[in-house]
Amino acid sequence: MNFKLKTSREMLEMKKDENFSRWFDELLLNAEIMDNRYPIKGFAVYKGWGARIVRKITEMLESKLEETGHAPMLFPVAISEDSFKKEAKHIKGFTAEVFWITHAGKRKLKKRMLLRPTSETAMYPMFAQWIRSHADLPLKIFQSVCVYRYETKATRPLFRMREFLWNEAHTAHRDWEEAEKQVREAVEIYDEVFKSLGLSYYILKRPDFDKFAGAAYSIAFDAWNPDGRVNQIGTVHNLGENFSKAFGITYEDIEGRQRYVVQTCYGFGISRTLAAIISQHGDDHGLVLLPEIAPIQVVIVPIPYKGSEDEIKKYAKKVFERLNAAGFRVYLDETDKTPGEKYYYWEMFGVPVRVEVGPRDVRDKHVTICERVNLKRISVAFEEAVQVIKETFEKIKRDLKDKSLSTLKDMTVDASDVESLRRAIKSKKIARVCWCGSIECAEKITEESGGEIRGQRIDIEEKPEHPCIICEREAEKVVYVARAY
Ligand SMILES: [Zn+2]
Image 1 (cartoon, rainbow, N blue to C red):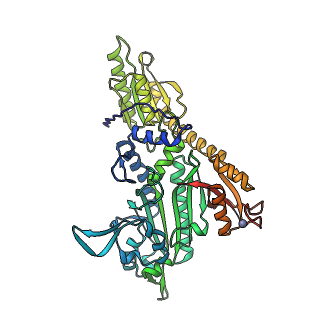
Image 2 (cartoon, rainbow, N blue to C red; image 1 turned 90 degrees about the horizontal axis):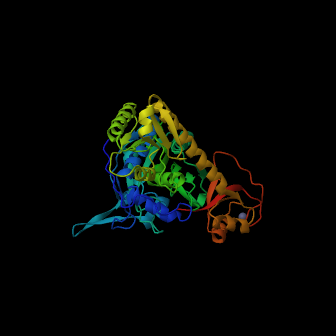
Image 3 (cartoon, rainbow, N blue to C red; image 1 turned 180 degrees about the vertical axis):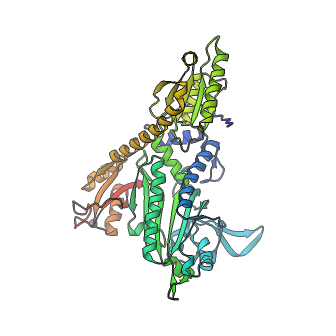
């Protein structure tokens, strides 16, 4: 593998806890993840390191989708206005954010088109043509593409962009029961992928006023972020018959009757998942990557010593060959930098394991292994290196997951009155509150605290122990309140 990476500075100046936002921006640029200086606001360039990580995340998700019977497809980016306008609530939800295509050269187009803000209205006219009988169901498809939304809120690289990368899956079923089963499968798939990335989040059923435009209900994955603003990394929607009625997607059932399909769709925010990985796992040294998604899993740094340079070089090559043969993505750093500079450099890029090879290692036929999460060093025999690195990978996964989960727990606080809710949101927490279910109280919560109701958990049942935090009538639900991206 040949990596040529150059950065303007080799170390981060910002500390994560002191100024998260600047730490994040500095890291994106220095670790060659994304360059946000593209001359259109809300659009940015994925650079080598970032694009490689994105590819790994996408592969993890796509292989899970294929295993569960979803077929990959690629739909056009342009949607006709007629098609877009078919489902009333859907248009209402997206109209304000649409990029319109209005001209071809100087000629005004007779019929406007738009860039997909999401692909329901691109796909469902085709579903109506493909689906004829019960034998065509279920239909389960996905695509990993960019979508376009003219965000009116302040844009942030990876978190909130006008062009962003996601994977969207769309399914059609015979009845409500099958669609419900599909929703559960989708939640499981996302949960597995996010968990294997070591991320922590709440899986919340969104309140009705905040569901996807055109859905019967929506479930979302809200990941914690150091600045207290939760990051929605995935959503799963049961669309019911809303779209099948609008697009005339029907099938003939076993008795020969024409029936509408019941649909689901779900979106996995690839850009936002990358943002969550950086934010949850990163530290003052830079990125911390899980071995699964690290473009380089092991970097070898030779430590030359006067008189034994050649010997060390030769030994480092031997170590490289062994690790490479074992199937690791390994890189031998033979650049002119000092070993210390190389350490900082590769720590910033989040490489999970560093192998140091110095004179003593050569003499003892050992290597020194340093892992990225705790930056601890151990010395192991050459013969054992492969096994120890494999174990270290497992340990890194466990450590990152545990650390992230304990942060989520620490960030979550109970608030039983408005004052404590206000304090919680102000101190970048996620508040757990009891709510009566009324829209007025929901609005009051936002007005008073700046946080918004994100929804109730679906993985566990939580019964309200207090009255509604605002009106003090009987509470219907326990909900999570936070600021959000
Ligand atoms: Zn209330």
